[in-house]
Image (tube, rainbow, N blue to C red; front, side):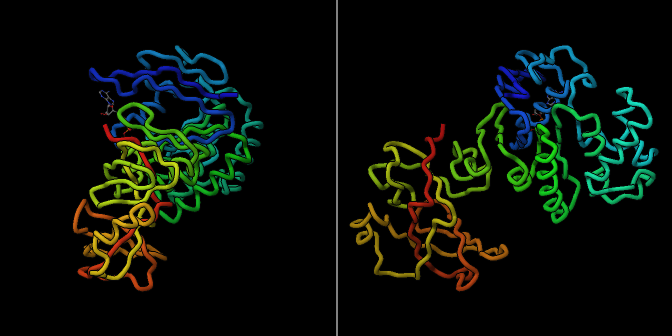
Length: 359
Ligand SMILES: Nc1ncnc2c1ncn2[C@@H]1O[C@H](COP(=O)(O)OP(=O)(O)OP(=O)(O)O)[C@@H](O)[C@H]1O
């Protein structure tokens, strides 16, 4: 059953559609993370569901109830937004109790619930601490406890871990995922950080110009971006126009192999960096010889190494090919070539994804 539904939701601001006829279903207990470039409408989507932004047309329901005309505090949503900071003059306990007291909970009930929530977010017995004495990560936990306190039907997070350093974010995101699953909370979150979204979400939405460009599980979106836009947004740079015939494709880099069953015709190809295979600079591997085996191995392409970047256990190489746009390759640390060296590359069909032609 869907907890949250949006039907043809449009928000017009300053003469343009900032949300453009958006349809979305978030299932009960599902965590959905919204990604997209700056200005694509992510915050407007959240604010519309929260009731902080009036929608121009369309319908939003939560648990089957139409939210039109329902004020923010009656929508049954918990908000953890950047502009909803903690009250610095109140202690931790009174911050967490805020929503409970607003809803008329008695003192004893509120105290019990606050203790339970603080224990849940890993800050047991922090009730009397001053907000100013907490670290950034601890403050985020208090904000989360405050948002969860009234047991909202939907929890909405806007850049929940935005202010924190990377290692703390990576740890907290794992804890958050566990906590949401344990509580059975339905979550809609916006984040700029792809790693965070992919680690937290059951499903990822990628937005573009007020529309949903792709919706899918993290592996689906990662393995099969729906378009060149999504591929580039995810940081894949090896994206070129192509014409597919049988098991190969003509591209600006020459003929590349494609997986069996790839539909023929005009397309865009995404070559994952791991699918760019390096060999030594081999003058015998000329284009002509490679053409004979194009269907199996594709052309061999000569390249110069422009730059190499160490990334933990592998190296990312920027390559300048003899023809076509620059290429990115990932190779093991050991034996990675240096800038200025010449290499040949071939392509692994298993790491090549056909995308629709670009508009
Ligand atoms: N009150 C307004 N009047 C006119 N345009 C607005 C208004 N509020 C927002 N916009 C525009 O709507 C677009 C979407 O804004 P929104 O904040 O939803 O994007 P976003 O994807 O959350 O961006 P960011 O990642 O930068 O936070 C932007 O181009 C923004 O300039």
